[in-house]
Image (cartoon, rainbow, N blue to C red; front, side, top):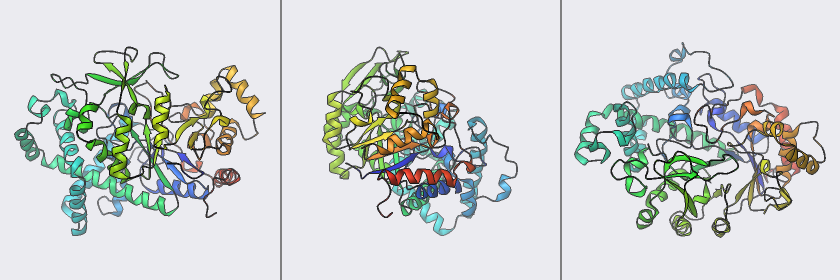
Length: 502
């Protein structure tokens, strides 16, 4: 669906300032929303919010529907009577500009477990009713997730396909025994989901009241080692004997990698999904729309055709394209849920068939300015080639920052960019590209906060195909100044993207 002319900022919640070493849903999140409001922005785009697995990637989670417990604010738990300030007495001095997951995780999880024990003992009748209501309303995914995580802990973190066969095959009697034996652990995992969604719901309500809509991110694939694949093996391409991914997802060689990207996720059994009227996907979209306003579909092209790589391959080079029932899929989603507020991530190898699928349902596609200056005037990422029904980015979470990109760009790209701009303004190349994005005809413009702050490649969020060392950038509280807000506000209003009430 086309959106009104507007703009926003891309920032994952882990990047907020916090004394706990990782951004969370506490005070700094509310301050950021105030910054958006004062800057005339109307969108806050986040990366996937699920519980991350190895490598801490939000695109590789233990559940497609659960929330990341590391985002829960311990300070908000004080307000709920579940922690006290003394619980924070021995916090270490975490780095302010980088996230050290190895140090953060044990401390954060320790606080959450303490809060859970306090909840068991001291929860008010109202809190108990709210918890019971949450567990009942989310049971369609929460029950499997909580049991999956409890079993995973009991198996020392091993992937589900390496558990005892009775649990791999989900034999009912074995699951009943596990639920009784692991009752306390299951309660804990349900509790932290309750707290995550309580805090996120409060934050989203605040954002919406301030005129800010949240753009969430739904990866097309889910992790093999996830509650989703364990609980629904029939809808994924798995090896029936070992439970491993028989066909793995990825993309062929492209701009980011000469050998392609091998993600390792199992591809879908689309034939079985279609027989089930795409029930799991409908539930996934419903769950997503419970806590975001707009959905960005990552790797949208996979709904038209997907790159499938056989089990055992070490790169994505030896895959093949396989057609997917994208049109039937979105028809069913539309029938069940109505007109979808969707943005389509249509980067990479895009064919006329992918464009036709996107345009049939009027989903805005993505335009990235960092891709605009390496070829000729026919480049679809050049602003004069944009359709109005599009969303333009200076860069994405997979790109370098604008300053980092410009500093390492080849001479041809730099020359083309400088000819296009005329010159670099005194404010710097990042403001030139921000201005270029805001002034384009694309209905929506989204700017990573790193570009607004003018940071270099030290602030890059992700290096595609690199398994470790990503997702760690954080900004400091003093970075969001009135001067910065005023500059963004002026440009936003000048380019017709300010809220209509202003």
